[in-house]
Structure formats: C-alpha cells, structure tokens
Image 1 (cartoon, one colour):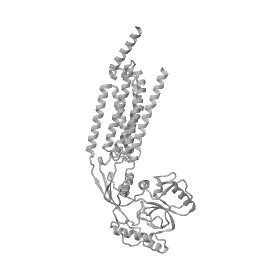
Image 2: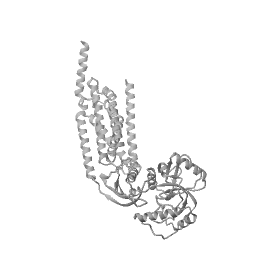
Image 3: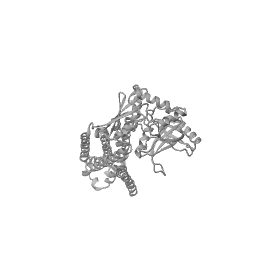
Length: 519
C-alpha cells in the first residue's frame, strides 16, 4: 500500500510541475518577447479603430461588377483578418470598399488595397538609370483620362518594336505618384517599367527595366511567408509555387544561369536576382531592402491572392469605440461578480475545498490572460466584448468541472469510503465525464468558428480556448491539489470539507451492512 501511495504522489507531483512549467513559459514569453507589453490587443468596439475607403478603378472607367467587388471584399477580408479574430471589417459601399481595423494606424489598411498582381518576368538586357524627365502626371481619378493613359502606356511600354521601346525608356517617369500601367499590363507582352522605391532610402536612384513576357503569375503562389533565413542578416519573402509553376521555374532557372529574373508586383520590379543555379522544389525567395514590417506586409498580400480590381486608397479616418472602455469595465465587473458568486457557492457548499476552486480559477484566468496577450502578438487576435463573453462562459464550464469532480467524491463517501480513498475513485469516474463534456463544448466552438463570421467567431474562439484550458487546469492542477488535500488532517475533517452529511450516510450504510452480515 505504501508503494502505491508513493507512486501516486510522484505522478501528481509531475502534473503540478508540468502546470508550473506551462505557466512560466507563457508569462516568460509575455514579458521577455515581442514588445514586452503585458496587455491584450483590444477590438474595435473597445478601443476604436481606423477606417480607410478604397475606391475601385476599372480600365474602361465603368462601375465595377458586383461579383468583382464581392471577390475583392473576400480577399481583403482574408488579408486584414486572416483567422477571423482580429476584429477587422471589410464592407462594400457602392464602388468602394470600406476597411475598418483596430487602432489608429491606417497604413496597414491602405496597403491592403494593392492589386498584388505578381509576375515573374525575364530581364532583357541591362537595367538603366531612370532619366529625369518632365512629363505630365496622368489623372487616374478621371475615368476617361485613366483609360487614355493606360492605353498609351500599353502601346509604348509594351511594344515589341525596339525603336518604340527606346523612346518609352527615355520618356518613362519613375517619379510619378501612380503608374497608369500598374496592375493593367499584358503579361503576354514585353514590359518597360521601373523598380519600386527603396523603403529604406526613398531618395535612391530608380532603375528602368526591359522585361520579357511573364513566365509565372501570382495565382501560382501556394503560400508566402517572411523572415530571416539561416546565415543571413536580411528579411526575405519566401514563396511556394504550385506544381506546374515550380516546373516552369525549375526549367527557366536551369536555362538562364547568369541572367536575371524580375519579380514584378503591380508592374514594378521588387527585386531582380541573378540566377546562379537551378532552383527546384517549388520554393524561392524574394530578397531586397525589406524591413520586418514591409516583408510581412508583402507576404500577406501575396499569400491571399490577387485582387480582381485596382483600388485607389483614400484618407484614413479615426473612429471612436462603439462601446468603449465603459462597456469593457461593465463586462469585467459582470464577470468578477459571477466569479465571486461561484467562489461563495464553493466555499459554502465545499468549505475548505472551495479554496482549491478559487486557486484553480485564478490560475485559469491568469493562463487565459497570458495566452490572449501572446495571441494578439502572434496572430493579431483582438479581444472584444463577444470574446469576453466566451471567456466568462468557458470559466463557468471550468467551475462546472470542479462540481462534477467533487460530486463524484461525495458519491464514493456516501458508499462508506473515507475522503482519502474516495478521491482516486471519484476522479476515475469524474474525468470521463469532464472529458466528454469538454469535447462536446470544444466541438461546438470549432463548428461555430468555422461557420460564423464577425463577432461570433471571436466568441467561438475564446470559448474554445477556455474549454481547452479547462482540461489543462482540472487535470494538471485541481486534481493533484485535491489528491494532496485528501492526505491532510485539515481537509479530511468533515467540518472543513463540507462532506459531513454524506459521511454520516456512508457510516449508516456500513453499519447497516455490518448488522445484516451479523444477522
């Protein structure tokens, strides 16, 4: 018996150590990584946001089609709200898309309107420094003027006539605030264009490229990510091509060693690396003067696809919180009142065991808080009122798990067992119920998250997170604490654990069974 108890103590100690390690890792990441701010990101309804209106621009100046606008909205929604938990919104308003993002920085929302038409084109000849020319800036806001400028640009800068190409190079103004051919070039024809401004040095001289017809387009991008690869000090954007595109890329790089390939985004050259060896496997990297922010933005734009329309970004406007901090305060007060009532119930009904309930719920809230901070940094999760509601319900389910566990212990004591022997038996039956209940709740949260949109997804996300953490808390913290409590004289007293009434029933049953046996 002593050997069994020792083994049981060792198992419960390992569970407590595992929970402590999880807590240390989470809060170590909170305080020693990222921006070191130990606060979650808040949603639009709590902290306000920034609204940017994107005006659709079509080559013929006609109003965009409804299906084009819906497709553009869906793509932008994925870009701005990839997992559906950042609290951002994209709405159609006539020929405009209205993007609202949390916070006061409208730069991100503006960049979302890029058409992101990526092409890979061979570089023909040697790039030349852009000439300082004085040409009138086309008025792309005027539909008729925009159509005329686009047609003229295509006729000269996409001509196959060498003489026309020379004139186009001499006349190309890389300092134009907007290029009429951006996103409107014909991929089957050559292209004369500029490289994009250097984000690190906007005054750096621009180059003019003569490019061949496109060999790969952005639709062939399977995935895109950014980061600093091994043995490098610069940020790069890594692209994964689809099967057909990877074959084209492998063949092109094999046949063009020593030449350049230009990655062209919206008709501007992002980078034009020299091909040193064949690149097989479908993956390649775009390097350049990237910062962490610019590399991440480009990867996000490329990852979620090309827009069917070009958009002109308008001014950003700050919008006030629809609910604000007063609503946040009211929601938190409601949650604290509910938590206090649960603790009062636990203390009255389970006496000293209620202290373990309070400790477990406190650790659950702390763990949820730390994870919300990290999720805000890692995936852009923004906490709003619907998310707070999901957390409150999830914490309520955690308290329900404690009730299930303690009631199973009472059932065992009612059968005549001591508190110490009732704990492992009660846990054996309670954990099955806890697993089942949490599995159903987690499945419901996953289905709701998959099918819902907007605030409902935020509710489903935090409900699923709280449900998953319920399992962690009950299995790694609550049960080991109750296990050790059952071995102490203080918690074993019926007056302290609130189990006196059922213990009396158990003693009566044992006495009756003994009497029947004697008879």
